[in-house]
Structure formats: structure tokens, C-alpha cells
Image (cartoon, rainbow, N blue to C red; front, top):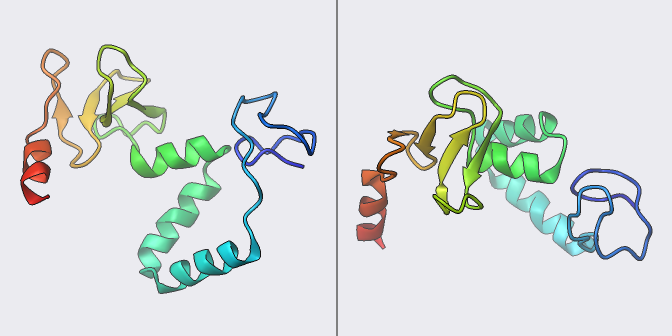
Length: 130
């Protein structure tokens, strides 16, 4: 069987990939695949194209999710980015970080953030809508 995250061959009974340490998920059922196909068929063609482009440009499932939810750096356009959920000083999935230029930004609105005060006005606006 292949790891759904890194694509490497792993034993059929593996619970975790020995290469990337991703948890092994069961293969989607035919019903799940049909449901995803129906959703994709109903999706705006431009959005579907962006998803397909992100998938083509990603080597792992984690990289694909990062490309979709974090995106490229709005400061230098680097693709070498990630969220700050695992950063103990920031601990916020809505903050993107460029690993090339060091810029932080809001992943919801692409507003550049000040490292001294990591806050975005759109977070308050989102809270008011819900």
C-alpha cells in the first residue's frame, strides 16, 4: 500500500508511515469517491482548476493542504510557507509564515502582520458574523 501523505510504499498493516510519520488512513470507499466527484462536478470551474493546480504542485497531502489554506507569501511570493499553529510563541492557524523572507500574514485576508503584535482586524469581523 502507498502512504496517502508522501506516496511511499508501506506495509498493508501499517498504522503510521515510517517515512513521514503520517497516520495511515483507510482508502476511501466507492461511495465516498462518488460523493467527492459530485462535489467537484458542481464546483466553479475556476476554483476546481486552482485545486487541481495545487494538487499538481504538491508532493504530499500536507503540502497540498498548506498550499490551499496558507498559500504563497503575499510579501515575496515564495511557496515556502506554512501556518503558525505549531509555533509555541504564536499558536495560531490563521497566521501564515514565509520560511524564506520571514514575513507573517493573516491567511484569511493576506494582510501583512507585525511580529511585535500579531493581530488582524478581520478576526474581529469574522467573530461578529457568527
